Length: 338
Image 1 (spheres, rainbow, N blue to C red):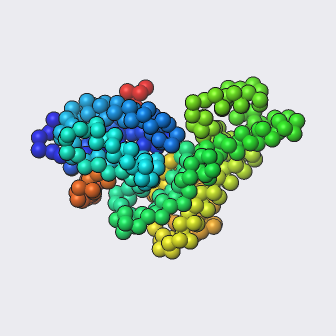
Image 2: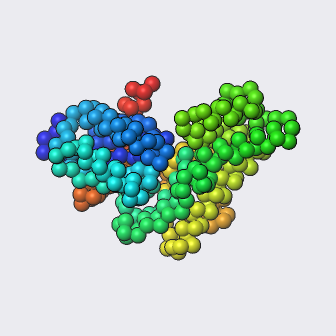
Image 3: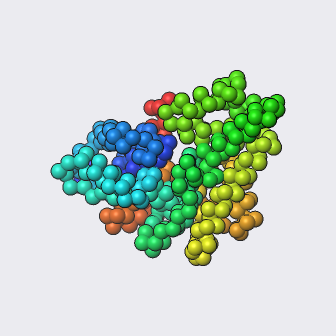
């Protein structure tokens, strides 16, 4: 254990997974842990609370750091900008650290994604993963605009979940019209390990979290689109248009945002085909914008926010250290999982 160091924890809690890192005031990340999703609008609160406790236990053991040495925890969670969600996170973290003095901050998970690309609390981020949201932060967090992020029941346009629902809708419509399955439908059913269209109902609705399996369908849709399948290409084109529309809403409300680079995060942007289609559509509809694809996970953004919150400047050297130490702990984490 390093002496005379202050330690900081960053937590990124999304719908699919939750990650936490711990590091020091020099920007060195010492340990990483990964757990299940922690969106408390999709998972029972008590389950999330227990899971976060286990996650923090594991993080402190891996880093050989005591609770008393942690000076700040910055949580970036799905819905973290809602007061009732923020109250829950504050209570859980405070209860975990008990009497030890620890600064706790809670923000929307989009903020972590933004800072993972900018290393400052300023800019524009577009997330397209299980869900979707466009999020603008200006004036060191004092001004925030958002578009989307309403959740899978009546939002998340252009997300992995959106793509999955469009794929299932196409298959079900063919069935209703008594038409033969096309190549697209056969491939999606094969991905779901189903032989019959009607079995989709059981496969999806009997899942504990059906939105996760629906959003996972985006993987096969993107593969088919890369191969030129017409149905898949149409669905991807529609999803991209929805995401560009979210940015258009931000631009209509804040003209100065058009000059900002766009940080793009989420599983869909990890796919080169999807990223290229998005960039092409963005240039046609809105104009040429610089895209920033972060080299680090959003959880590093949450950790960076913990440093910034304690007035620790993020220098160029620190950015390099963040990247190098992140790559090290991320690789170790992947090796353990495999």
